[in-house]
Amino acid sequence: MSSVAKSRIVVLHLTKYAESSLVLHAIDALSGRRSFLVRGVKRGNAVAVFHPLSLLDVVAASSSRSSLAWLREWEPAAALHEIRGNQIKSAVAMFISEVLYRSFTTELADGKLFDWLCDTIVRLDVETGSVANFPLWFLVSYTVQLGFMPGDPVEPQGIFTPAETELLLKMLRSPYETVMAIPLSAQRRSAFARKLLQYLSHHLGVTIDARSLDVLHAVLA
Image 1 (cartoon, rainbow, N blue to C red):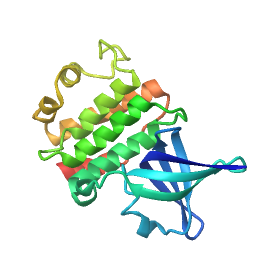
Image 2 (tube, rainbow, N blue to C red; image 1 turned 30 degrees about the vertical axis):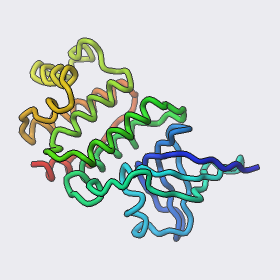
Image 3 (cartoon, helix red, strand yellow; image 1 turned 90 degrees about the vertical axis):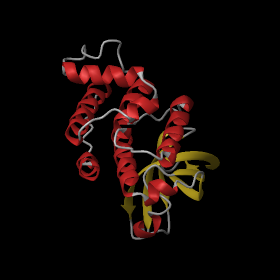
């Protein structure tokens, strides 16, 4: 027996399936982490619609005979022209989507986190200033959303140095605009991002090996 449902998703990753189909990995507003089968489309033709962090309104059919839902209809919930067309913002989106792909595994809906994620994606798209600190702001905010950020950031097995602790506290206590304006070298941003990924990995019990961080570092350097 099959069922059909409408929902909104955040695209994380695509993998090839057979000759003309794809498996779309996403976060679903109704069911958390989920995978969808997209039939009759080649990867090259799908990039424009299913780019990292795309917000899509979809109609999916599920069956008890398969763990994959079939994506029947889809349309953009937001245009996100900057994320698609701006090289730097595209690199930031790729990094964020990879972090989510490797860290967000729950199949339970979390409306508050999903709404925050949608707001974050739109915020990246409409940002008119530098987005060099956006990945750090995202990682710190994501950790807070997951409930892992302690009152004393030094506590978790000495992951952060005193200088990194000071930076972390500043990001936690400052509004978005202030965080985005913090002067940091490309090397310090990259090193701090790796420490934040290490911290997330420690609490989630997974290894978040974000290969796109090197690409992001090269683009932002």
